[in-house]
Image 1 (tube, rainbow, N blue to C red):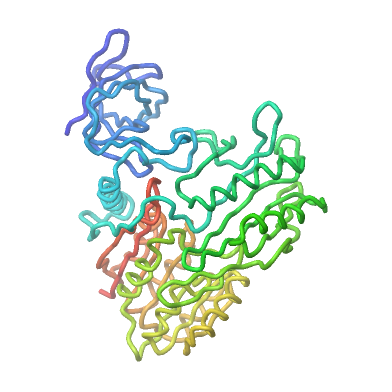
Image 2 (cartoon, rainbow, N blue to C red):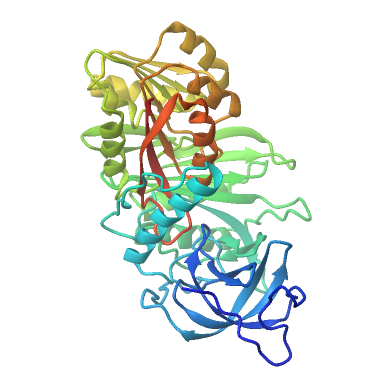
Length: 471
């Protein structure tokens, strides 16, 4: 499809080599060619790229320019003249206001196609890999209610400034939108959110106000295990010892027997964590995946999609293909989610993680599973890696870093390590592309496959598993 910029009275109309640049307020008729990473539709007017919020490929629409940059412009939809057959009605009342979802207006099959195309485009543009070997997106059985953990911020709602839990406003993340129901979490999780908001108001607990640097309630996290049905609530607060907090925790557990613990994390006015305590029960829950039982502390990371995490784990191990006589190095192992499955097929696994809390849980999880030949190391990856690479030439390396990806020195050291196989699990394809550019530099590795996983339906995010082999 070709983008169109039909001339409209009182506007610049279609930009070409002879016309001035677009300006905010200009109205255009556009045809959307593509979907950019982040969920915006892409049109082109002569040499100018136009990003249109909420537009889908194949749609013809009227739009108003809201912002211009040297290389592109941004526009808002005024009227959809021809809608995409993939357009659906978002079920969420907060869609378009809350910044948590970008793609509820796009059908699930089209979302999966778009993710694959976006991964290919990012690998071409950032990593310089045209026609990258990207497979079809692995989809889950359920595109709603999939979140293992949701984090909400407190805000003052309505004329009475009652405390309420919400999410960041689209385009203005400093503002919090009170949320009545989030479709990405379960009905039980939404009931807990509603209870916390109502109880905080009834007990006159004040939300944190950044401008005044006052108030008690900062954030609340709800973790929900699918297999065990356990739930864990973490309350982030300011300092102090209000008796209403333990009372709230007791009432929460009484109303919701699934809640096995309520954890409190206290922050000072500068936002520094100063103390953690248990208001009720325990500071962890248990989840079961593929026959393994995982202890997951309140502050530890676990895969976000309860419906697809088993497929992600089995797909990652399949890509790594560990053999009985091999030694595997795993970096960013967390609570051992991937480690236990790898250990069953390899002779030796050395798993490194910077979080002491996660490593303690990982050791318990490995012992419970009877995993032998596993050593967990609690060190920052950058500090631990040089010694580990000098120790031996590893048969394979497994990476599952946080969203920020690999520190540059880590990527360069792995590229020069001489390992035969490398599997990289990433939750940001742009960061994956950046790191692959370093890992592939010099020809030490060849990229065999990138497999997208739809761990984050309705949002811009894409999980990928990349397999590299020595070239």
